[in-house]
Length: 216
Image (cartoon, rainbow, N blue to C red; front, side, top):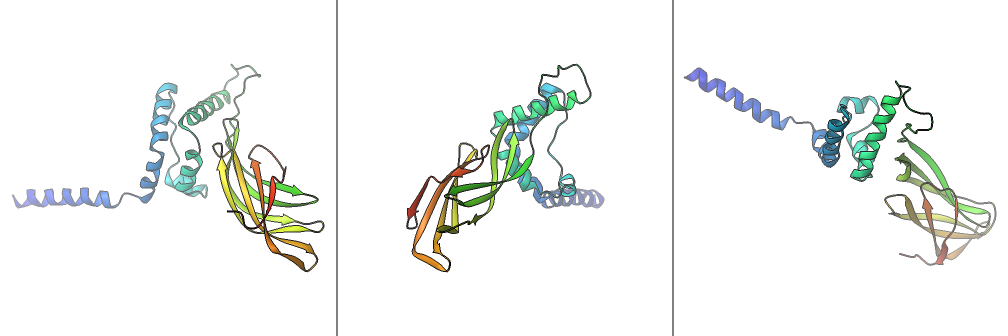
């Protein structure tokens, strides 16, 4: 009887301890639950065994679980379905010649850096961005920093920037709060706000507007 009670106690402790010891990344991974359900659905349809990278795989690639969550959460579930299907076509085409050369199997899901300038006269303000491409669409992942170039006077030196993403992160509107340098060592006491909208799939732009004063 005592032995049975000891065994039951050990089992209960083991179960309780297993809940305590669930790794933190599992909870973070719950944010991918809708995508995981779609992935199961696609695996059943395609006969594949795709999954999200495990924690050790992420560590080997210098990534964190939040990186995966951030990457996929910018896709709609329908875009994610297309993303998985293209991955499937890409996988099977690598070992088969049954498809015509005109068909597209290369999946574009890489992240890359891009600098984009907003020009006024011969000077510019720029943003350094990270963009990812999936399902043929470029989207902003992040705006990493900003700066300016000057080839003449007057020029605007940005002191602060705010950003608003639009169209599923395909565009971003930036407001740069600036000091105007009118000549060497001479500045305007007024503050200026330069507004520009960039496209992830586009390049440099001309300024949309420059306002005198700090525009909110």
